[in-house]
Image 1: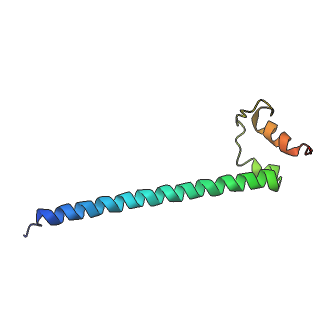
Image 2: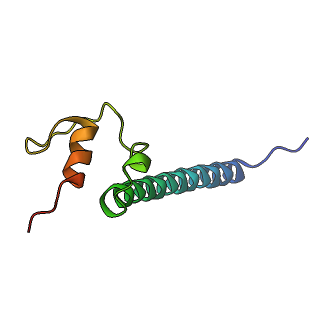
Image 3: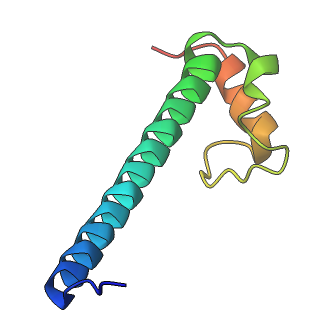
Length: 87
């Protein structure tokens, strides 16, 4: 059985490592793109379409509202969007 020269082994290991790094970057990019799509869909559903039933799947019933100007929870956010717009 022939042994593989160490230089080729090292080159193959580097190529394998580069391939793994590429796959990780691609996976991260794909995950980021999916997250962005999800957030845009959620905001479009609530703020543009005002489809509150569909928006419930994006906001947890335990949603924490951090603004002091909006009532707490998911219902506080939804009620804000439901309220008449001020000019």
